[in-house]
Length: 191
Image (cartoon, rainbow, N blue to C red):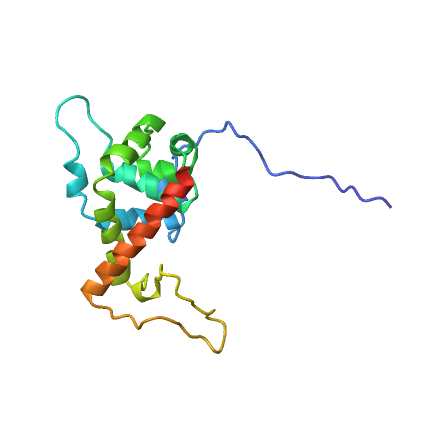
């Protein structure tokens, strides 16, 4: 006797509308990195960045939104302003950060090159200090001077170098070194 093994597919209709469309917030997992970027940038004081804007003329995109797009782009290895522009139209995470706004690549480039130029170091410092305060990052583990660090999995784990104090002055010095190193890395990516 032959059995009838008919193949059954799930219903597929890409043009079917939704009665109640979901919000973007519902579609992003609770612990996704995009939420971390959003929360960190929301916690940073951007008054200095906002002062870089002149009044008058047409309205501008909010610098907080543009900064979130840039930071999440860097976290996601998206550096090109054209790719960032496309992401705000195609990628749900960028769409959520941008609040469904779609800045073009010229706006993103202008923001990155002109508006952030004088304030990025301050913002960078605030972000690192916030991450240290929240114990997400340990400043004593950041070495940019060629210090040798053995693997954590090694039972003979050790660190060569001066012992690091966690006072504010030492942290500022390390932030400056980290900033200089970050600038070199960014310049090498651009070239």
